[in-house]
Image (tube, rainbow, N blue to C red; front, side, top):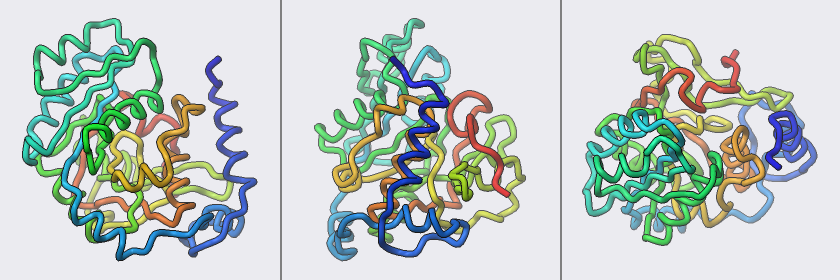
Length: 289
């Protein structure tokens, strides 16, 4: 039986309020207890070793989980297929969570180079993306970009993310700034921070972007509508926790990376518009104070 939202919230709070970990100092926004619980729980790989690995990774897989929103998925793919990246090193994977609106065939007809994985049931955000990542890694992907079906990406989005990741080998996840589709200069998220009760807050939510989040900044977690990460990171901390199904799973994933000594920067100069109310970036996060 699927967990209720309250049960999943309690599971999330239980996991991150009872574990006592040890390691590097956390951002000043954290109170003392949370600083303790999100520190390294195992020995980290040396930065030099990770840097050498990152320099060799070039194949990127874009994963889009689709569910009963055919036109949104097609619109997302329209922009993803225009990404400025070598086609022979870019895999586009659509995971369909048992849609009843003809999404799989529509994607195959419109974008024949995209791989469509049809699930026999709705596996949620976690299960759908895990299926996509498993396939991507089997095909040799070095980097994974998880996108919601209701986002629009800029053609030059990938290069800055790759450059930032290769420059900082201890990155767990990278993400762009996210904007409202109907208000392209109004922020939806510039990363997520946690308060003393582990409640999540979107940095800059609802603010006009006047350059206040232009530089790369580290956050506690990133919005699940656009997450960029590497094969070594996935192999190190594992994939999304299926118990969450939908809600809190991307937060849990980012915090597990933090616990392993990895970072979650927001790449300030790249953005993606996100349809208001169409997905995950604003669903349960309050504006940052």
